[in-house]
Every structure is written in structure tokens, then in C-alpha cells.
Length: 287
Image (cartoon, rainbow, N blue to C red; front, side, top):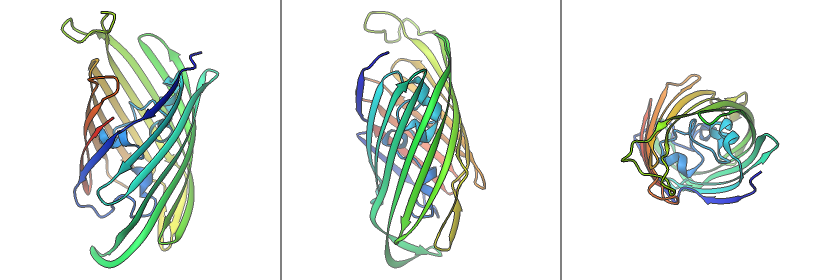
């Protein structure tokens, strides 16, 4: 077994622009569970179900853990223009045939202005969100041309708004398949030893946030149940194209997409979009 230790500070920055919406991130009951909790996820427009293979897979698609063959310690810091900050730390390591991971995520702000019926009240409220998750994934098929992994995760979350708190739990399950396609054309970048790379296709499916009900003050809510499907296509070794769709119970479908470049091992510029009812987000990041 490979015992390499990888320490990653992913997502040096992530920024997004969002159209007006009636449910801003972090200002309504537990809606942070349906928004990204990692800097690299913001950079790709939150299109993560087919691509994440880090400890944050326990949130986006636990099956991604099945492709981790070395210990990974990951931390992330994200800021929104509205003054919202997100801190995350996670650890994943192989155990037997599978991989186990744990993650802690904390989102907070020094205060946001209360809005009632679309009008600012002049009152400032504080909020914080704490999420703890653990997951396990098992590779079912480990072929050179085809690989398949399945996984599941457990999550507990606590949200506090203006001193009122609530606690919920939820489960997620997913699958992720990877295909190795034909070799790259001769003009494409080569490996360090001169050998050719291969075109790759990754497909992910996830049923997220099963179970759980919540109430904060007079606001009743549940964890947003969502079915997410997506794909990532890597036509050559220095770029990837990502597409994803999400259907939430009681909410409209969201469409996401992104382009990610790999000019070096340590620098990955990303540009993404996220379109749904009430919001259009354009995002960019560097990791």
C-alpha cells in the first residue's frame, strides 16, 4: 500500500457573482446544505459529483473516496462578497479495500442585514453553520479501461441564526465510474517519459441529504433532498470539461458547467457557471 502523505491547500481563491435571489447563501434555514463548502467547488460552479476525489467527497459524492489510494489531509478557506466565510478541514485514508474519510465544515459571518418582504429592516443578525460528515467508499471494479466505485456518507449539521439553533442529520449515497478512452493525438502534450496520455471520461451519480427535518423559530425546513448526475471529460492532459444537473425535491433543476486547466501540477485555473430558478452564478478560482 502506498503510504504517501498529501497535504493540500486547495483553492487559493474563489469568487462568484450572483444575480438577485430571495434565498441568499447562509441567510435562510439550512440552505447551506445545498451550497458548496469547498473553494475548488466554487471555482467550477459547484459541478462536483463526477470529479472530486478528496475528503470533501463525503459531501458531494462519497463514491469519489474510492479512488483515493494515499492518505490525504485537506483544508480550505472560502469568502463571499457578502462577508460570509467558510472553513473546512478533512482527512481521508485507505482502510482495507476501501477508503474512510471525515470532514468538519464551519460557515459564519459577523452579521447580515435582515430582510422582510424584500425590504431591509435595519436589524443585523448573526449566523453560523457547523457540519460534520464521515463516509466510506469501496471500489467495485479496478480495471485499466473501466473503474467503478460506490460509497455512502453520514452528515450532521447545526445552524444558529440570531441565537436560535437547530440540529439535523442526513445520509448520502453515490456511484462514480471512470472510463479510459483512446490515446491522445500526437500533437497533444506528452508525459515526462515521452509516453502518451489517454482521454478520460468520469460519470457520477449521487442521492444527497436523505432524511432530516428542521425548524428554526417559525421557519420549517428539511435537508434539501437532491439527485445529482454529471460527467467530466478530459480530452487531453491539461484541461477538463465538466457538466452537471441537479434536481431537488420541491425545487427546480439546476444546471452547472465548468472548464478546468492544468498548466502545472500546482496551479489549476477554473471557470464555471450555475443556473437555476432565482439565480445565475458565474464563478472563477485558482487552486
